[in-house]
Amino acid sequence: MGTPSEPKAVDGCFACRARHDHPFRCLTADETAVPERTHVSHIYQRGQTLFYEGNPALAVYCIKSGSVRLSRMTRGGGEIVIGTRSAGEIVGFRAAIAGQPYGLTAVTTAPSRICAIPRDVFVEMVTNSPTLALELLRLLSIRSRATEGQLISRAHEPVVARTVRLLLATHGQQDADAQRPVEQLAGLSREEMALLIGTTRETLSRTLHSLAERGLVEVSPSRLRVLNMEALRARLRT
Amino acid sequence: MGTPSEPKAVDGCFACRARHDHPFRCLTADETAVPERTHVSHIYQRGQTLFYEGNPALAVYCIKSGSVRLSRMTRGGGEIVIGTRSAGEIVGFRAAIAGQPYGLTAVTTAPSRICAIPRDVFVEMVTNSPTLALELLRLLSIRSRATEGQLISRAHEPVVARTVRLLLATHGQQDADAQRPVEQLAGLSREEMALLIGTTRETLSRTLHSLAERGLVEVSPSRLRVLNMEALRARLRT
DNA sequence: CGGTCCATTGAGCACCATCAAGACTTGTGG
DNA sequence: CCACAAGTCTTGATGGTGCTCAATGGACCG
Image (cartoon, rainbow over all chains, first blue to last red):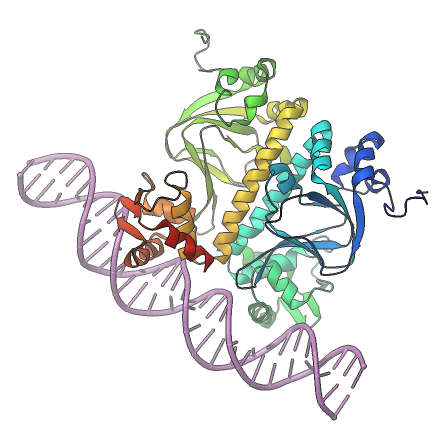
C-alpha cells in the first residue's frame, strides 16, 4: 500500500506514526493529513547535518530510522555531545515551540530516513491537537530531566563515575541482576563513548583500564565486558 | 474583595494569576475555580524545604512571592544548585507531569508565600485546558534550554567564563551598552554566587580579584561593580 | 609490506577543590 | 564608644583530577 504516484513521501505519517513511542501516535488520520502534504522525507548519509546551532528553527525533524547526534561546537573546533536521538524521536521541536533558533547542532551518525515538518505546520498541529500538546509536554518533561541529570553528572562527578554510568546504562535492560559477564556497547568507538560522557579518548582509556585492573570489567579494543555489575553500582554510592 | 470567611486562601487564583508572566494567566475564572478550592496557600520562612529530591511528586508549587532554590544534594553533604525560581513561577510541575518523583530539592531562600496544588488537580487542569498545556509546553521549552545551557557551561567552561556570564546576566537589563559602572548582584553572598556557577567561595573570590586586577570589575565585600562590559563579553569569545 | 585508523601509554601541566590561616565586617553587650 | 565574638571574605599552600601533546602498539586493508 502506499501511493505509487508519490515516490517522495514513501510512507504517510499515519502509517509511520504507528511506531511504538512516537508522540504522533495520538493523532487521527485527519490530523496527520496536514504534515503528510507538507513534510519532506529525505535520506541522509552518515555525518550529514540537519541544522546548525544558531540557525533559525524552520523545521521539526522526525526520525523514521537511523540516529542523530545533538551537540554544540566550541570555538576551538571541539564538539560537546549532548545526546543522541533515534528512530521514533523528534528533533528540534523545543526551538520551534520556544520560537528561538536551534540551540544545538544535529548530525546524523548513521544513514537515516528523516522527515522535515515545516515549523508553521508543526506549531499548528500542536495548537489544534490538545492531545499532542499534552504528549509533547510529557515527553519534554521526561527528556529534559534525563538530559539535565546527565549534564549535572558531567559537571560534578569524576570521570570514573560517568564511565560507570555509561557502562550500566548501555545494557541495563539485559541481565539486570545476573552476575555473569555481559557484552557491551555494540559498535561505539572510544571516541564516541568519550564524547558521550564529556571527556577525551585518552582519559576514558585510562579509566577503563583502571576499572579492568580491579576486575570490574574486561577491556579489549572493540570489546567491552562487564564482569561485576554490583561492584560497579557500588562505586556510584561511594 | 476576598472572602473574609476564608482567611487561608488569601487571594484567589484568578486574582493571583493576573501576575505578569504566570502560565495560569490563560485560565478563565471557571478554570481557576478548581485549584482555588483545593490548593493550600502557606507562608514559608527562609530555608524551609518544599520537597526533597526523591519524594513522590504530590503537589505542584506556585510561587506568589519570595524565591526558591532548586538543588541536588551530594552524598558528601554538598549542595549542587541548579537554579532559582521566584514570584510568578511554578515549581515541581515537570515531575508531576512525568509521573516521577521530584528530581531536585526545593528550599526557600527568602520568606515566601507559596501555594501547593495537589498533583491530581494540576494534571486535570492541564488535561482540560489546551491553552494551559501549550503555555506550559512553551515555558518548559524555554526554561529547559536555559537550564541546559547553564549546565553545559558548568561542565565545559572554566570558572572565569562562568563568573563572567553571571556578572553579565545579573544586570543585562540595565545599561546594556553604557560604558559606565553598573551596580551588581544585590544581596548575594559569595557563597551563593559560587553555588550558582558551580564552584567554591575561594575559587570565586580569586577569580573576581583576578578580573579586578585587569580592571574589568571593581570588587569589595558586599559590592561588585562592572567597569568594562565589552571587555567582559570579549572574554567569552576567547 | 607499508599505510591508515584506532587504542593505548607516558610525561607535563593547568585548573580547581581542599585545608588552613589571616583580614575585614557586623552585631552585641558592657 | 569600645571590646569581643561570629560570620564572611580573602589569601596562601598543596594535591588530585583530567586535558594536552607526543609516541608507541595493534588491527585491518589495500
